[in-house]
Length: 338
Image (tube, rainbow, N blue to C red; front, side, top):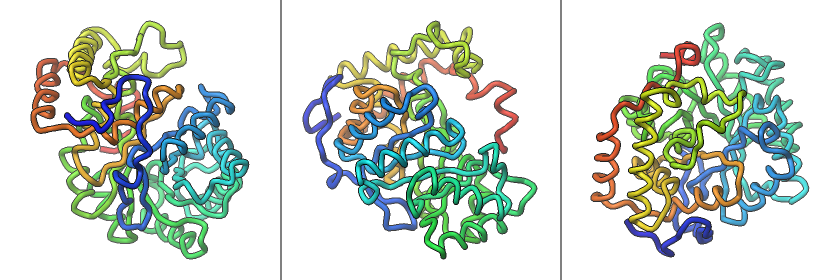
């Protein structure tokens, strides 16, 4: 494992965006390869603290900011929009948002797409969205119709590029045949690796950027998560990986992983994100966080080079603790398209 400044927990990564930047597939968009997710902006993270994170993210060389119209019912977009306007920083960042799940704009019918995009543009206080994702599929509308509507928005300049979220390999092929898809979002981490079967290889084949959310396994892999302190409204408490034998296995796994990271004079979060990034040059992860120090820690993963020996050691740790448990319970799983 090599790291240019041998960072330890709490230190800031270098401003090395140019040396490590990654490009978004089927587009000229490029930037620092660790994005910032805004799912908790305006929800569990108040506006002021969200703005502080955004400020620090850009100071560190950050480029890609991810949100959705459904996050905090649009509040996440509003916070980002207000921040961009007040800082006069719109041209320095690449903004992605997702549509299809906002209660006022459910689904992907052409009219709904146009109305949802106009509402997002207003909240974001901008005249264009760099990357528009379909947050989920809409079985009542042929994907061809949805993509045609989004394509019209590209022609008008309101949207620059298109992405999908949590789709199947067949859906991705079908969509990409209609209109170039630049990015695909899905969960991916050391503990969640379903995409390795079909999705990740397909994105590489089609030149599509893969954007993994929850690269820290929703906090499990950091060895800092106190499951007992999770609030009553935290959905993770209902997930199999946070319960019973699965939880015991995962806590042991996280402890072993943390010991490995400490031996390398770095942190579990940085190693976990670096491992995700090492799975392909087309990967740009979007970890989210509430705290400035963890933002800095996550960003530093871009400067961590894992050797073949490191990858083997990490694989051995995961193999030693196989009882990870399913990603979701039956309740959440029914919302995923198989």
